[in-house]
Image 1 (cartoon, helix red, strand yellow):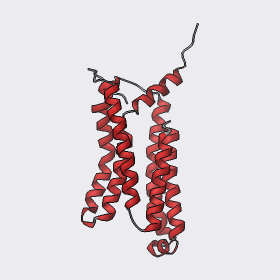
Image 2 (cartoon, helix red, strand yellow; image 1 turned 90 degrees about the horizontal axis):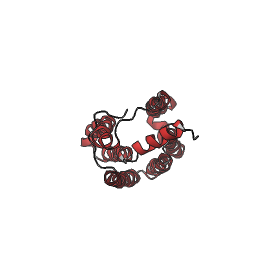
Image 3 (tube, helix red, strand yellow; image 1 turned 60 degrees about the horizontal axis):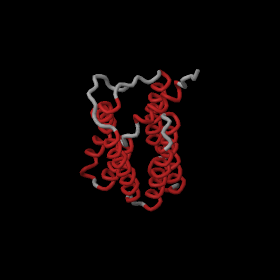
Image 4 (cartoon, rainbow, N blue to C red; image 1 turned 180 degrees about the vertical axis):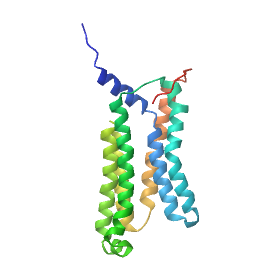
Length: 196
């Protein structure tokens, strides 16, 4: 008599739920918004608003695109706890990256320690994506972390946001390709419940 490995089944369902490429598109868009905000002062606040809307837009896209194709999935409390952990960790990382420079001495300190700051920022960005990859069990996020961390470091060292445009475009286009494959693989179904 064979036994079911419920943990493995849930892991496969979770990974299928994230095959749609929407998270990649969201992260790629985030970096593109950062690029826009750093190159056009008059669009700065528009870029900030767009950044705040990426999360809700991703959740809405999951309900509209993914749920009708994969049906209803109720993930375990442990899996949901990992999601909350990721959100809290990202919020803490953003707060730290904002506050630490002021604690250390503000813009003057940043300018005098540009190399350290550049690599530190890259490491911080990679660490955030490594946490996302580990806690959400999505290995491709390690690659996104390397790409984004490298983009932030190079952008700071060279004094140009162009690496962010390149990295954001690569991830967004990769996510779009994943989305197209997902839509072809999973036709829309009539379902009443939404995965959480």
